[in-house]
Image 1 (cartoon, rainbow, N blue to C red):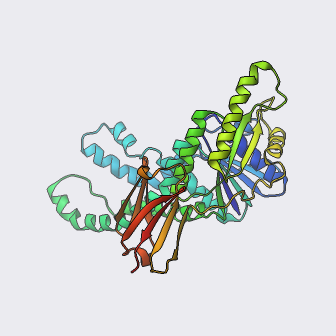
Image 2 (image 1 turned 30 degrees about the vertical axis):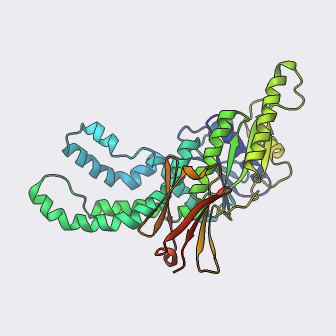
Image 3 (image 1 turned 45 degrees about the vertical axis):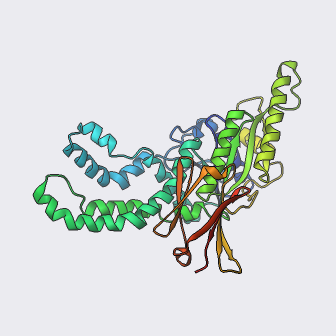
Length: 391
């Protein structure tokens, strides 16, 4: 079983690349499904307006496609929580319509797409799951949510539930403020259970890889750097960079000469900065890449003899150890394109908090390391190395 996530800045062609990868894999004999988690779905367009919906639809032998309706899943798992939050906001004087809107955390509906990936992986129906992710900002938010939810359910949920049970009788006599009951907490638990195991699945480098789709443009490359950093921070393995829409060598019109030179400079920059990740090159097509046959031809040229489902590179976003001769242990986090001053560290409840830019990850330390103090931290190349003292 393999899962491949495709992400990139909006408009770089990641839907086309994801669809072509899926078609190529299916025609090599793999049972393949390609899923879109982008709220602005365009996967059906790539398959020549195939009637795609919330359930998998066969588009060619061995290939199914799905445009996930995350909103419907949100209703199933978040309905009771939303109703409770709406009642609190209504009590506080919010307009009923505004209260209903505010009771849904922005982007929460998208996270339910991840639960479907776990379901597909566990079903045994597919050899390969290809995911056409939303543009990079939404993808980072989406992929960080399992980590955030896991921390909340492990650390905050039990204490909050116990406290609510204790104060509910008192509050009911003193105020009309709605207090969360067991049904609300049960709904939260069902919500979390849907996500249970998703993070382990997606951060298992033997199963899941992310691939960055870029165009040879300065703004796109800069965003790809940040994406690579944040994916690594949250433990996702990246195994390739796909440089899309390169001007073909046979384009010789003088009008394109300077543009080709700029592209070549950017490709050299990508090769240098993202090494040792392999770079896959895709030429700008002379026609729209619509339909299974054109996607297959594009995929054949893109992978150039490689198997599309193969792990194109191996990496360890997070590793611990080995134990040094003095008993200390080093925890190492892959953080490409990050300078020392761009990282903040903290400790809380046995976790190591790593903050890079606007994103923070709580790295859950093994029990044997939770009581060890941090003796040093440094950037060694593109890895953050945190030394934990001997017991």
